[in-house]
Length: 245
Image (tube, rainbow, N blue to C red; front, side, top):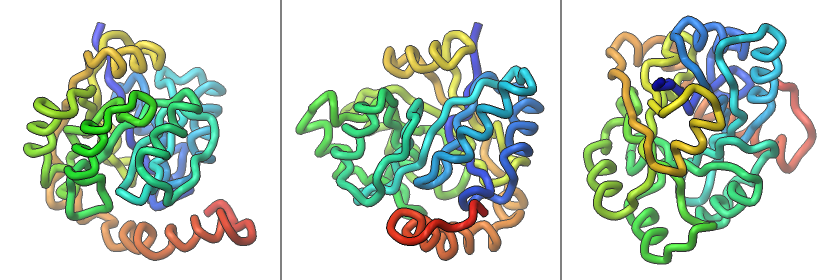
């Protein structure tokens, strides 16, 4: 049996536009087996959605995750149970993900339209190869303009240099786009997904967003992403506590 996992979803705890409950509803409607909630530098919604899925006996299983801001770009930390310091070197962040028992995946690689890990940083990881500080996967299917602008080059780089698992994610910031891209893997459970990533037996799949889908809520989401959320995350880390939303 082949499972479907959407490994990058955002809620309104971060720069997303939909509440956690709506994201889970959409994942169920999309027929997904596994999802990862990956708000930027914030794990709270991931725990909330996982608890909600268990309470309602949802067919969707939830793995906690974070989209961590490193000095080199964003990094998905999957299967983690604790937050990870932001703005640290890429290799150090990957090592911390692994210390926590997690999986490290590069989202929207090489993209110049969002803060992404570039080719030179990925080549450097490969040249200095250290399993503790090496990525486990790379996102090769992301339906947004930002996510697919360098997808062909990223695939070439993975096939010839990196040789890690390929993943697909919707990177959905509102519920209507959940499940528009996904990772296919043998099995249906989080444990089987994890094994497939480590064994490099995953496949990226999905479709592109239409212009209408890109524009729906774009201004509000970009304001949250570029102004409100960075300030809130820094204040939450280093200042006084702030409200969840």
